[in-house]
Length: 296
Image (cartoon, rainbow, N blue to C red; front, side, top):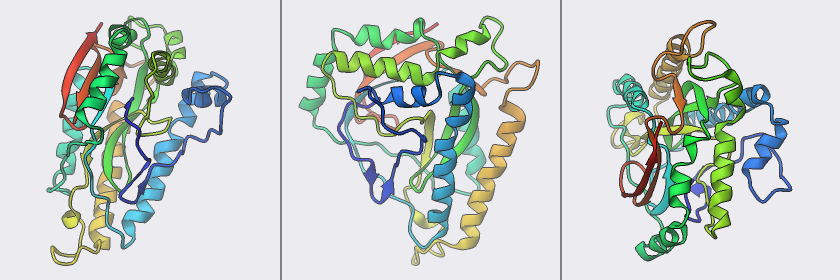
């Protein structure tokens, strides 16, 4: 939930609204998806993957074309994000290691955009509610399931969808999934706006993902170091590798009847650590923590 004002176009990568929702009468954009689903977790469970899936299909066509994958630029911002439970970082590392044979030069970069004094002004504006915002998941516990790799022409991410009552942990009732990740984002958006902070999310709803790698050089899929035109065989090998990982994710980490979800296949926002309010060049590991919320 970044608070910097940014464009959805970066170096030719257009992050269009693929949520399937139209406009809403609310000034909170997260109401649109919830309203479109009739507030039904089951319907939302099928609608939400529409965004990553459509983006993946469209990006596949672009990656296969003669255009280069986008290069990253820096951006400075302030945001509150969930550092994730201990199993999720291990899980994302597993996905990165699986991809290394195909993309040996893949990496992550820092982002930047606003200047220091602008960020300090935002943090000062939020100071009276930072504790409330970062501790919010303590009593509003949204669960995400069904991890899979999604991608566009700029990066690869580990995407999740809101749970809809399938295979809940022993201490959680299925009905708890009626409050979803999108309800949580809606509420945090409302809290931020209520104190005068303009929220500019990088991705439109219904995105629920962790970026694990970014294309920073075309060399992994180009014909040669001197010819940066994508090599069709290398590109297809990359796409096949991603789909192979996704097949393994579905087989090993997706919910199954009468079985607990394997560690890493489920993410309850705020588990072990609350939301992390950070500032600076924080995307992809930089910046500093203003306040870390209480986990459960």
